[in-house]
Image (tube, helix red, strand yellow):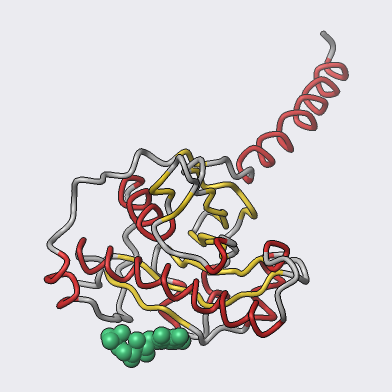
Length: 218
Ligand SMILES: Cc1cc2nc3c(=O)[nH]c(=O)nc-3n(C[C@H](O)[C@H](O)[C@H](O)COP(=O)(O)O)c2cc1C
């Protein structure tokens, strides 16, 4: 191979391989969560005694098993035959989606399959709230009502019920965190327009609240 064809070949390989590598690096893959551990947890009355909001988070990541347990507690399927969940929902709409913002990207929790489905690569944690700690904590849950699931309900009913349904999920997260020694705070202080844009939400999706989860800062 002469010098010219060697150069052209190298160039061709670079064109083919380098963009492929970058695309591969950016591509977010679904995360199949391990089975939730249903035999853990402290007694309910002690957990209720310890439930609290905390705004001080370590940047340590949550292991996959902890993330799995957390999301199952939040809104996992607890009665597979009926397709029902750990939190109630008005008219069984199941209209509140849990988006999970982590350093590597944004995912959507698919409760039926207990999978995190990729939504966007890139770190949007800092946009999930107006408080500084949101960018440091490993996980920010964003509760989004999907009004395409609420049929012909009135605007009032859609808004009241989706806020209530979010509250039940959030409390499940609070109780799980209190049981497992994790820090958490539910948050309404969000620039919803900016976050909705960053998440590429549709017009019939509404951000209700967000909730930060992580290990307490030492
Ligand atoms: C709907 C709702 C919105 C909230 N929004 C925020 C918030 O944006 N930022 C924050 O730091 N705490 C927020 N909180 C947490 C409350 O400040 C907290 O629950 C309250 O101070 C009582 O403290 P405790 O949860 O430790 O009992 C919110 C709580 C609720 C229920």
